[in-house]
Length: 260
Image (cartoon, rainbow, N blue to C red; front, top):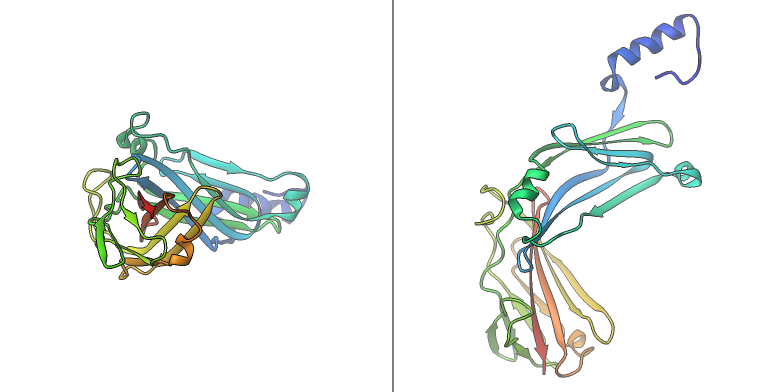
């Protein structure tokens, strides 16, 4: 632990600290530290994500419950002297034909994930986050309402007949509240929805995105006609409803509609 050669009482102190190990050092938690799962229920793929935020650090490590290192980051040169404060990553998300959910969850076991780091001021950072396989169920009965007409959402964007909505009217997207864990993927368990997020996007002629975060007791969102007017009659808009659970785990569904 001591960085310089010492003699006398100082050596004894340094040796004692080294024998006690990292637990004896003063440690602070990260401001935010989470490891979580995101499932795209429509496309059939799943990945692992992480978000870490804290005082400027020069080293960061994530270790799974079995002591296996998942990630090690150490900036170099002037970036190491400056320090990093925030890190977000999401893994590749192969479809279920390439990586079945059972294999994914075997690869990333449930339990406590340790996130440790060292600041540019040589302070130890450490947080523990609980990683679970319990995922929110996808929302049911998704409906599109515009100009006094309500239509069921398409199963996906490849459906033969996508709903058509007027380009000059507001659109309301509604869905049933999610109260249960996913019936088929992951583990069964209690969930607590903390947020819905709805994202509507037009990919052509250029990418335009309209996104809103909603509290758990709100299960409808208005898409203003002013946003739809960026498209042309016949254009296809995609929307995604994402359900975030208290553990951080997220389930998303996607669909599309056409403006007329």
